[in-house]
Length: 286
Image (tube, rainbow, N blue to C red; front, side):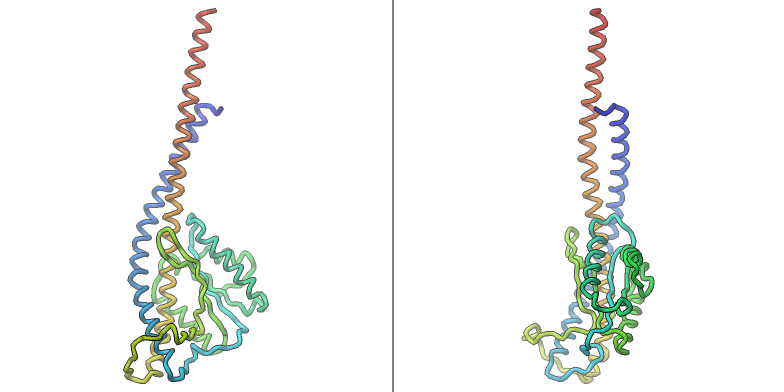
């Protein structure tokens, strides 16, 4: 059985750890509140404008846009979102694992024809350690998402797609469902997927001014910029939700361990007192 001093030292260590995890939970919870408010404001707008775009794209008129052109995929880009720091459960591990699976799935392409855009230090470190060349440093975007930076990255990708420098762009990120649930999502960013007629059946017909082509020329880049910014906010909210949950679990585990150690300490102390009494009684009878 451990000595009283050892058990007391372990109790103090667990207590200090519990204070840290509890404080980190409160910080993560406060950040989650802000991030959740941001994605809650942005997501309905992005979804509504995407539905509006889907209605236009599903119309009877032929759509001519460089962003809907389907080409044979010879060069791909992947924008993958992680966090800059750890202690957020399986948030980063899941992203890194699925990024590796994505790379294995597209291993038929030469490495120089796979362009990787890691948003977040954790996935950046994982990719560079494996010897992959990344297209830049986007770590700052993970902590403080801004529309200006997301729009600049979206513009760069749109220009590359228009010039034929890349044939397909995909996104890999955690979608925020709730504090306890984040869904890893892999979706096509470019070319813009054309909707099925069934998906938009029953939607309102629009009277367009100016023409459909002019409207789409303005709407498509806007939707693509908004999409990337929304995904950035989505990933950020998921990170703080995952960290809040992870720190809550760590705090609960510390509480359970403290109960066990306190019980052990009391038993050890009681045993020590009993042994001392037995020694006194034994000495007096000698």
